[in-house]
Image (cartoon, rainbow, N blue to C red; front, side):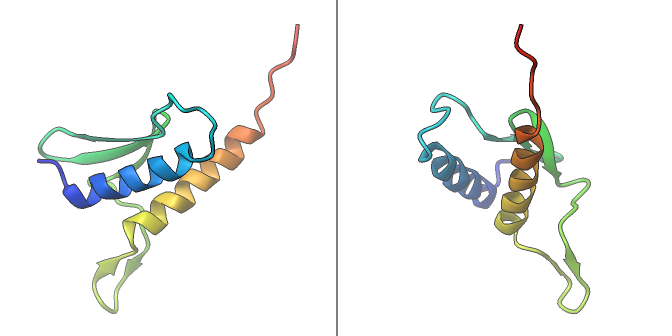
Length: 90
């Protein structure tokens, strides 16, 4: 089953990234589900899974950190890591 809240967040973040004018044809974030578990990919890399949720957990109110905040942080970490990759010219 598709989680509409997750889809909304992905659409919002993809729209924000496409607004940069770079990579108009690239699907940055992607949602997948097999009916049992859900995952979110960023340019093909898994950054969140319902089975292995890495968001900050708050014991006081028994809740996880907001998914959008988590995804923004993870995407920014990967963008920083990707920006360090340089290929030698021939």
